[in-house]
Amino acid sequence: NMEVVEHVSNVDIFMQNCSKLIKNKGMMFVATLNKNLKSYVFGIIGAEYILRWLPMGTHDWDKFLTPDDLENIMIDNNFLSDETVGMKFNILSNSWSVSEDTSVNYISTFLKN
Image (cartoon, rainbow, N blue to C red; front, side, top):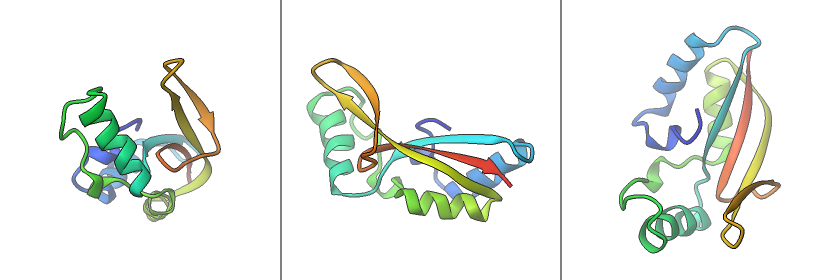
């Protein structure tokens, strides 16, 4: 689920359905945006309104999830947290890289329990 959960109306129901599709000991990757002021500035104002990488209104900050909130939802749906890493975009090189900074974009790995 790469860049999906911040667009669904009910993450709990979405993850319940995802859980049904994954076998025990299976793996799910979830990439999304953190929920804080920095993610609002970079993910919405920067990406949508300043750089125009995305159409205005693509993201709803109320649907963003902190890594802890995502982990709790996943635990409730029979997953164990494996790893969470940040993703950083370098505007000068036009490239993404893995980072310890999860304050804007992050990817979490979960194992089906």
